Length: 70
Image (cartoon, rainbow, N blue to C red; front, side, top):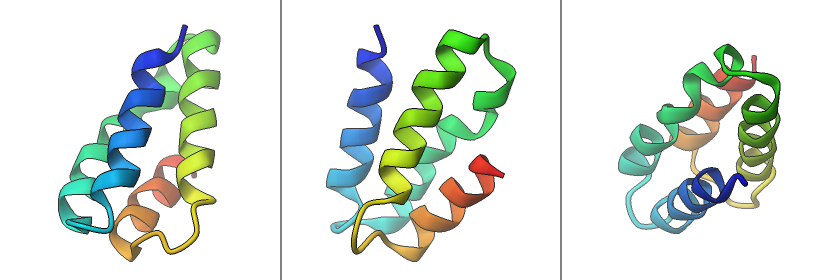
Protein backbone atom coordinates (compact mmCIF):
# COMPACT_ATOMS: atom_id res chain seq x y z
CA UNK A 1 0.00 0.00 0.00
CA UNK A 2 3.03 2.31 0.02
CA UNK A 3 2.92 3.06 3.75
CA UNK A 4 6.63 2.30 4.15
CA UNK A 5 7.63 4.69 1.38
CA UNK A 6 5.43 7.41 2.84
CA UNK A 7 6.87 6.78 6.30
CA UNK A 8 10.44 6.97 5.03
CA UNK A 9 9.78 10.21 3.14
CA UNK A 10 8.17 11.71 6.23
CA UNK A 11 11.20 10.80 8.36
CA UNK A 12 13.55 12.34 5.80
CA UNK A 13 11.53 15.56 5.83
CA UNK A 14 11.49 15.68 9.63
CA UNK A 15 15.20 14.97 9.92
CA UNK A 16 16.35 17.33 7.17
CA UNK A 17 16.13 20.61 9.16
CA UNK A 18 17.91 19.00 12.11
CA UNK A 19 20.59 16.96 10.34
CA UNK A 20 20.68 17.33 6.55
CA UNK A 21 23.56 14.89 6.09
CA UNK A 22 21.73 12.12 7.94
CA UNK A 23 18.54 12.87 5.99
CA UNK A 24 20.48 12.65 2.72
CA UNK A 25 21.91 9.31 3.76
CA UNK A 26 18.43 8.05 4.65
CA UNK A 27 16.84 9.21 1.38
CA UNK A 28 19.53 7.40 -0.60
CA UNK A 29 17.50 4.23 0.04
CA UNK A 30 15.39 5.40 -2.91
CA UNK A 31 18.37 5.55 -5.30
CA UNK A 32 17.50 2.28 -7.05
CA UNK A 33 13.77 2.94 -7.35
CA UNK A 34 13.81 2.46 -11.14
CA UNK A 35 14.75 -1.21 -10.75
CA UNK A 36 11.48 -2.15 -9.04
CA UNK A 37 8.21 -3.26 -10.60
CA UNK A 38 5.80 -0.58 -11.85
CA UNK A 39 3.65 -0.53 -8.71
CA UNK A 40 6.59 0.10 -6.41
CA UNK A 41 8.32 2.46 -8.85
CA UNK A 42 5.26 4.67 -8.95
CA UNK A 43 4.98 4.82 -5.17
CA UNK A 44 8.68 5.58 -4.70
CA UNK A 45 8.64 8.20 -7.46
CA UNK A 46 5.66 9.88 -5.79
CA UNK A 47 7.62 10.19 -2.55
CA UNK A 48 10.74 11.46 -4.30
CA UNK A 49 8.63 14.11 -6.04
CA UNK A 50 7.07 15.02 -2.70
CA UNK A 51 10.50 15.43 -1.11
CA UNK A 52 12.07 17.45 -3.93
CA UNK A 53 9.12 19.89 -3.98
CA UNK A 54 9.44 20.63 -0.26
CA UNK A 55 10.26 24.29 0.50
CA UNK A 56 13.54 24.93 2.32
CA UNK A 57 14.88 21.46 1.50
CA UNK A 58 18.57 21.18 2.28
CA UNK A 59 21.09 21.06 -0.53
CA UNK A 60 22.24 17.64 0.69
CA UNK A 61 18.83 16.03 0.32
CA UNK A 62 18.01 17.95 -2.86
CA UNK A 63 21.19 16.66 -4.51
CA UNK A 64 20.48 13.00 -3.68
CA UNK A 65 16.83 13.17 -4.71
CA UNK A 66 17.59 15.06 -7.92
CA UNK A 67 20.15 12.46 -8.94
CA UNK A 68 17.75 9.63 -8.09
CA UNK A 69 15.05 11.20 -10.26
CA UNK A 70 17.53 11.48 -13.11
